[in-house]
Structure formats: structure tokens, C-alpha cells
Image (cartoon, rainbow, N blue to C red; front, side):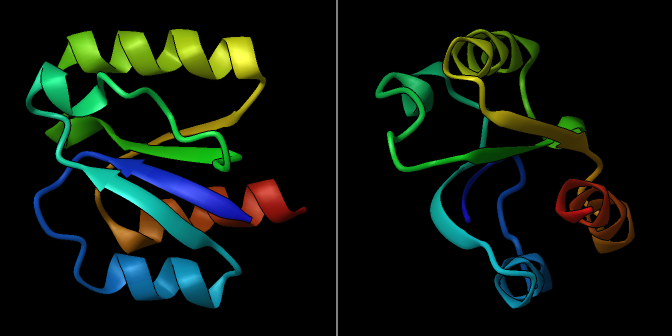
Length: 93
């Protein structure tokens, strides 16, 4: 599975933990500047993780719209591994 992460300046262990759960991180953007998302979601992404406490609302709306068009899995979570792990478990069930 491939993923894009939106939000947060640094991922720390989140990156490694997602890889342990079978995700390949294709792209990470901070979600603070609109120009970061101008290229859209890469075509090889099937899951988008959005850290809701670190991203601008305008960017979330752009991502949501594109994600719905492409029928991508969209995961909206806080930037905390405990929250992310719970969502990853739900996806993999």
C-alpha cells in the first residue's frame, strides 16, 4: 500500500511505524502552504493520511475533493501514533 501524509513538520516514528504496517510513504507535505498541493495527490497513492491538527482547512478541502474523485482511502487523525494505529487497524480489517 502506498500513502501520502499531509500535516506536521516532522514525522518522527510515525514514518517507521507506517512502514512496519505495510505502507510505503510516497509523499509528505506540511499542509501549511497551498502551493505544496498544487501537483495534487500522486497517482500511485491509495491512502491519504491527514493530520488534522497541523493542516490548513483550505488544503483539507482540496484533498477531500480529489480523494473522493479518485475513490482513495482518506484518514483524518491527530498526529499521534495511538490515533493513527487505530485507524490503520480499521483499514486493514
